[in-house]
Amino acid sequence: MLGRSRSDRELLDADALVGHLVVAGSMYRLLAEHRRVMFDEGLFVDLFPSVTGRPSVPGEVAASVLVLQSLHAFSDREAMEALRCDLRWKVACGLPLDHEGYHPTVLTYWRGRLARSDRPNRIFEAVRGIVAETGVLAGKTRRAVDSMVLDDAVATQDTVTQLVGAIRRAVRQVPGAGEVVAERCTAHDYAQAGKPRIDWEDPAARDGLVSALVSDARAVLAAFAEARDLDETATGALGLLALVAGQDVEPAEGSDGTDGRWRIARKVAPDRVISTVDPQARHVHKTVSHRQDGYKGHVVVEPDTGLFTDGKLTKATGEDNQEAAVAVGLLADEPATDLEILGDSAYGTGQARADLAQAGHTLVSRPVGLRPAVEGGFTLDDFTVDEQTGTVTCPNGLTRKISPKRHVTFGAGCRGCPLRARCTTNRTGRALELHPHHTVLRAAREQWATDQPLRETYRQHRPMVERSIAWFIGHGRHRRLRYRGQAAGDQWLHLRMATVNLTRLLTLGLTRTPTGTWALTPAG
Image 1 (tube, helix red, strand yellow):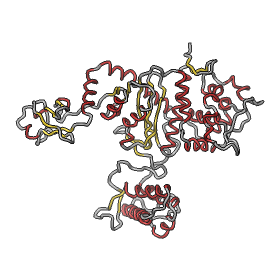
Image 2 (cartoon, rainbow, N blue to C red; image 1 turned 90 degrees about the vertical axis):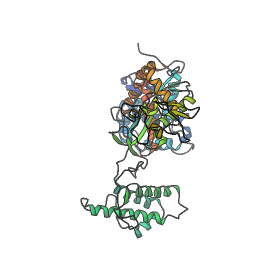
Image 3 (cartoon, helix red, strand yellow; image 1 turned 90 degrees about the horizontal axis):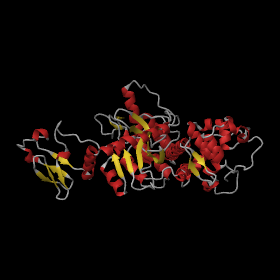
Image 4 (tube, rainbow, N blue to C red; image 1 turned 180 degrees about the vertical axis):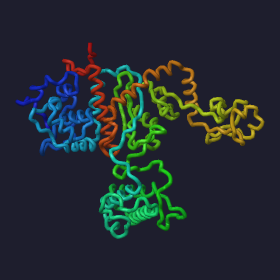
């Protein structure tokens, strides 16, 4: 049953007694005066279809606590302590002075209800509705896109820890796996958490342990290889075990693995699972020199106001999770048309440019520069590409056909060419590989080189998305996710964007008019 707040004020109502101490224009005052409008009862009624049972925390109170928790980067326990002891929180949530707050698990309960619904990000959607009602984005024809790395909520595990953890998970989640482990697995007592006790300084002992753990994992997988009646949870546990047992190990030197000898692989798998506690977290290389573990948060920002219009949390690896691919999907939901999309070079792929152009948008992004085959020599743009005839002509006037796979080989034609020293060092002559969207990319490079106003637009408006991300991160307090898994992380991302948007709207002069609408009234 969805709880309801009392419309009449209690004797010890915090707002009535000390509300004047809460600063006007603050998040606390906004929630105190308008939380019932911002997060009305209808927003959450579908989460509690039953009309019987013990009433839950009122929806506008729960939403207000979640927003304030996001504002301060508090844990559930810290948020409930603030609700119990901080007068500003009591005023914001409409509670009496002597209210003892709620148990921290209430927030877990509400997040779970939201996560299982068909609209887990409804608080963000409600705030987006406020943004739309103010009209602050009306006529705004630019959006900036960017991504940030958010640290995961678990510790990165080494190979041994992952193998032990994956087998322990199989014991918990696969019917009959406990018996298989007890009968066939000898590398470790899997009833005990933590690593096996060995001499970790002894290479032979380490290799022996890895071999034994991999053999145990293979024994469990073999026992259920023909099982067809396993549920999704059990299948997932076995799939994780198979992945962990294969991603970090390789046959020992002089072995093919059939003799049970394995070792830690001398390479890193490209999509390596870093923890069995959160199998969706990944290694992230935001730059060549800096690596983090976690997820990517992709955002769309209106650059004049710094407001988030959309966002998505994804795994850190995989083509579908690359910046350009995610941005195209997010912008597909933009109600505005004919937008200028500002993004760094990661967004300037040929496919993204083509997709955005098809949607009626224009991408303003610095193209990735071309590297000549010979230092100071010719680049691809020095060749004439004719898509109509399917030919390419080199700087010396030699023409060759484009193959069905878009390869171009000049071969013997380079012999004796007076320009060869500036073109290639390959003894067989110059060869090209044309991108499927070569024409689009070439036009973008030419435009960036010659269109000064385009570059000025980028330099003027693009930095705002980085400022919005800085507000989002909040001096590092919000860089680490508090919840495991992509879905829970995405829910948190949207809540944090909603909180930053409300803060930004207050700065811009958010008010509630006498006619009951949202508007912006700049100070002064």
